[in-house]
Length: 174
Image 1 (cartoon, rainbow, N blue to C red):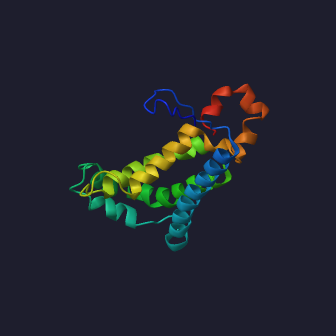
Image 2 (image 1 turned 120 degrees about the horizontal axis):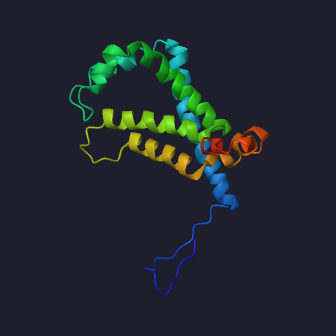
């Protein structure tokens, strides 16, 4: 990053994402975020299998949140889906991030989870910044910076003939 000592308020700056330290840091951030979700999902799978009953029960108690009646309806009517998808989704998202495969796609689902957690868990008594919000920012970072390309399988997958023949698939990778 360049800095103009003569004019610290200059509107010109550079951020070099191609450097080795940046690549190491983004890969580390991706793996740690992946472990966080993988561990959460695997723990739920070990303890409850695909019957994570806490999810629907929690949603049914969210009557006074910013999401309004939506979580209560989801908990009452989609409980069977939530019981399976929370542990399975967390595990697959985490696994994808850890190995660096389909990182953007996994991160979109991770951002969706974290948005629901953030809005659902927050009472916003201490402002909007919480652990769930920081998790959301991590997933958005994975999407924007295509972190699967840094020491991840996405770097290898992008070079396959299949992806070269279907270049739009690169938007899912990274």
